[in-house]
Amino acid sequence: MSRERRRGFGCRAQSKDTRETTHVLDETGSVTIAEPTKETRSEEDLDLPWQIVVHNDPVNLMSYVTMVFQRVFGYPREKAERHMLEVHHKGRSILWAGMREPAELYVQQLHGYLLLATLEKVG
Amino acid sequence: MEIWRHNDHIEISELDPFLAELLRQIPASASPDGVRAAEQRLFSSPTIGKEPELCAEWKQYVEPELRRLFQSATETVAADLQQLNGNEKSLANRTLRIPAKHMDAWLSALNQARLVIAAKNNFTETELSDHFRSPIGSRRDLSLFQINFYGFLQEFILRDTKS
Image (cartoon, each protein chain N blue to C red):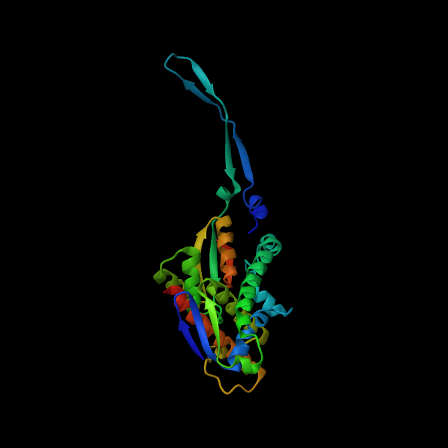
């Protein structure tokens, strides 16, 4: 994914002022008013998690798919094989779930290995 | 044909002209040649018909990078295959050496070729599971043989990669 794209993608900041003032009584008996704080949450924080689904493909070799899962996700061989077999028998397997930007990068890598992979919103 | 694994390369020797020609066809076979089904298989959608904005950005930013990645792999393979240049006679008993550092490029090019051939021929899952179809009596049979031959090479390289 290009750097330009990543910079402006999925990370727009949303700001919100918390206007509630806080009155604090200190040990001298005087009251101080706390300043309103500015709370910043990125769109990523507000985003629903995404999941990466790999779909069955009769052409890709089983051993190749296992190797790709190991390389891309760093999964141990047994876990990679489990997912590969799930893809083979059930037609699809959820490989990973998390925030959108890393999910996109994973899918890009999977496409680089020519696997049929898609992003789906969880829920 | 014999295939051997060495420390820093794989050696394919005693190649007959037919198999040598199939090897030489890897880069060309990996090209979709404007066939929509093949193009769609190499550059598949990142979503299932949803998120049109994401799909549009993917097409604009990711596809060109994937295209470069795939092309780089086929170029590496094409350069290795120059060892097989020559006429039919000079191909007799020719040996092909694939350096270990090129294994990923070979895996990619072989995979591209297999996927493109399968998409162009619209092979069914049953046909693709038939690894022993013979004799080769049609262009379709030849394409299926090509997919299986390239798959055999992939398996051999993968064993090398794992070890």
